[in-house]
Length: 95
Image 1 (tube, rainbow, N blue to C red):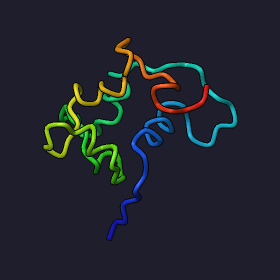
Image 2: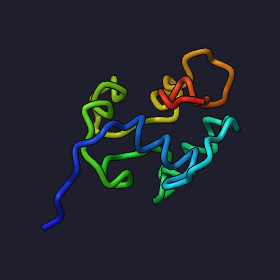
Image 3: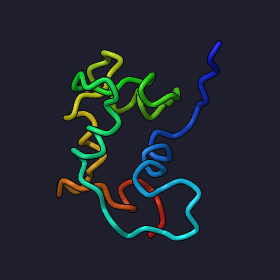
Image 4: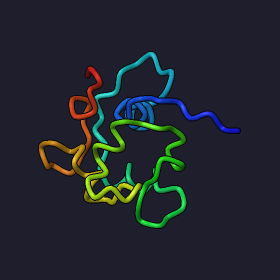
């Protein structure tokens, strides 16, 4: 039986984008599409909680159509300034 951790989706994505366990902070923003494609493990054009390996309230908030997956459009909402990249600030990670 797999136990799903309840965690912040933004924390999970921050770890993916900026590295896990690193003592140095990254100031290198990453393209939204590149992150989406990397998280879309099965390549079906959407991300579900199984691909992330966690259960997250943030996931449900981003899943605006309630279909249990994040489309690229829903995922792009993380890019709050619309410049096509995910910055530390948008992911709530100090620079």
